Length: 68
Image 1 (cartoon, rainbow, N blue to C red):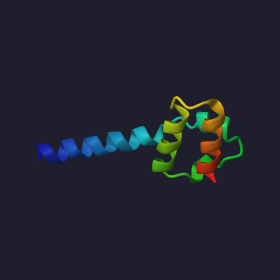
Image 2 (cartoon, one colour):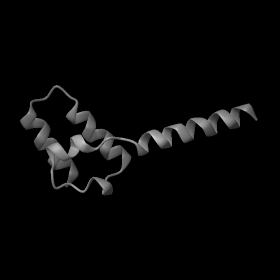
Image 3 (spheres, rainbow, N blue to C red):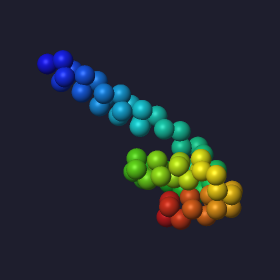
């Protein structure tokens, strides 16, 4: 029973955390992107690109390619 409660709490925490991802950084690199249509995996990939050490031009190109 304790395992079930702990697992449920963990899932709910993960769900609420994914719902609160700040996507404003994506809009800086792809202003016309419809962020609402992206999956959580796509958003996480794009945010990884944005926070990488690539140049701003490379980041912009990758983000725009990924949101299409």
